[in-house]
Amino acid sequence: MGWLHEFVAAIQGTLRDVLPIALIIVGFQVFVLRRRIPNLARVLRGFLYVTVGMTLFLLGLQHALFPLGRLMVEQLTDPAFIYGVYGSVVADVEWWQYKWVYVFAATIGFSTTIAEPALIAVAKKAHQVSGGAISMRGLRMAVATGVAIGIALGCFRIITGTPLHYYIIAGYIMVIIQTLFAPRLIIALAYDSGGVTTGLVTVPLVAALGLGLAGTVPGRSVIIDGFGLIAFASLFPIMAVIGYAQLAEWWARRTRPARSADDLFMQVRRLSAHRATTLKDRKDKDR
Image (cartoon, rainbow, N blue to C red; front, side, top):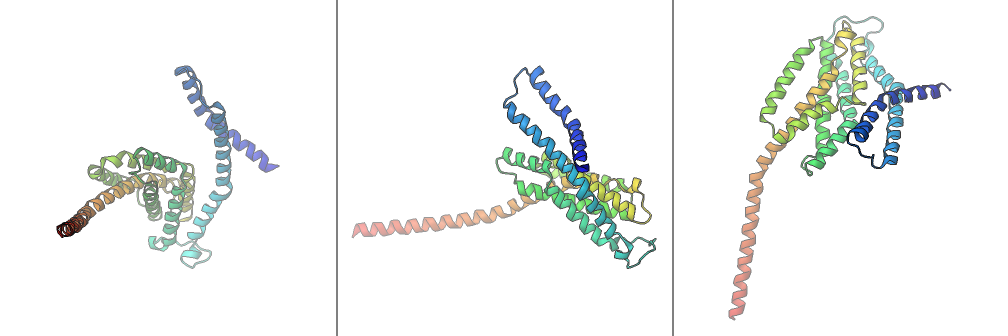
């Protein structure tokens, strides 16, 4: 019955987290706006779904994804795997020998971001509001690519032990430069895309990855080096989305003249065919 007690404790914790949000919304609806809650039965059913779903999701993270991610990091950073040395810890750390760590970090960052519920919601709303101009798939792929690059670079920072603020300052300088030349349609969405990556799926796995990596790489501190990957996961999607919009705009400008030439050629052909038909009809009429 241990699993039942754990489930009850988890659902109580979820209720403590969700109830204040629900009370604030209901309080404003009833006491400030002074209106009844529309579709009350459906709202209560949705609240139940959210509570049970979040509970099961958090239990799944705790029992499956966290231990699996920690185990993968420990195995990928094991000296027996990297150096072929058993037993003793190797003192010298060479960043290129952790290539599989970078691959694992990029793939886990990409996959968790694609599955992030907050990103799916934002991409769906952006697609609806823009009238289809912003692609859901394109936005999600751009954000996930940015997270993958950011987490891989963050793992490089942990392995090499370089200061975190160097990367963050350089990254935001790059974001400011991109913002000056980016289409206005995408700027606000790009900045929001950096925030939606810090959701239920991405944050726990990325935090576990950073802590596990800092705890297994020789000479690294879990407190000093273990944290900071979430900052990378928030910064690089902004750069990726703005870069995606800039590339799309550049490609549209590049292909527009070619399309105009093609349209002109087709128009000339249609006019020539119409003229030939008109001349033939006139000859037939004269006869």
